[in-house]
Image (cartoon, rainbow, N blue to C red):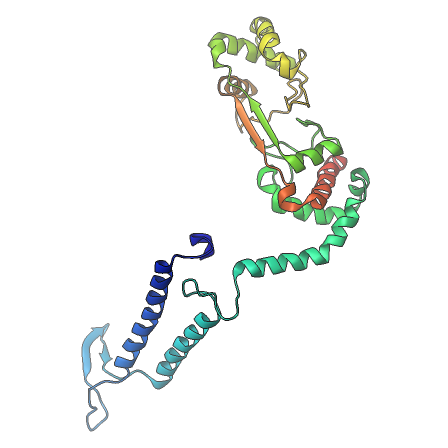
Length: 309
C-alpha cells in the first residue's frame, strides 16, 4: 500500500478502503447466512426437489450447505478479521502488531550487516591484486557481481552491445585497480557527439580512415582523404594515432574491440552509425547501493577476470 499511495492515505481514501473491505466481508457473511438452509422439505423417502438445473444429465438438488463447509467458511471470515486487526490492511490502520514490509526489510538488512560487515571490512583491508587471488573472497564477490552487474555486463562478464567486456584489456577508463574502484564508486558518463554536419562524403572518408587504423579492409583513397578530417575533429579525443584517451573514456580505435558492434553488423556500418548519430553511455555509480566495502570486493573480482584469461 505504501508503495502505491505514499506514507499514508488521505482521510477519505482510508475510510473508503475500510468500508469496502469490511463491507465485502459483511456481504459475504450475509450471503452465507441467508443460504445456510433451504425451504424445501424432503419427501417420505428423504428426496428433495431439484432446482431445475442439469448438466450432462446431472441434476442439481436444492440441499442446504454441508455443516462442515459452513463452519469452514465462517472460520475464514474470523481469520480475515483477525488478520486485519493485527496487520495493515484497513486504510491507515497499521495493525496492532505494528508490522510493515519496510520495517521487516530493514530488520533483515540490519541483521545481515551485523553478520557480514566484519567480513567485508576484513576484505577491504587487502589490496585488490592480492584479494583477487583469494578464491573464497572471489566466490563472495561473484555473488555480488551477479546480483548487481550481470544484468548489463553478462553473467560471464563478456558484455554486450553497448556494455563493455570486462575480461579483455580494452578499458575505456583504464583497468588498473584504482580505475575500476573509481568507476564503480562514481559511475561513468560517456558521450560521443553526432558528426552529421560533416556530410555523408566526409563521414564515409572518416569511416574508411578508422578502418585503416585498426588494420581492417578499407578504401585506401578514401582513408587518406579522411585522415585530415579525423585530425581536425576526432584526434582531440581519440588522439592523432587513434589509440584513444583513457582520461576521457575515448576508445582506442586501433584494436579489435568495438563496443557498439551488433551481431551480424560490419565494423564499417557500426562506425558510420556512430559518426552519424553519436553515442551516449552511462555506467551508474554503485557505492551508494552496495557500499564502499563491496565496491572494493567487486573491483577485485573484475580485476581477477583478466588474471584468469
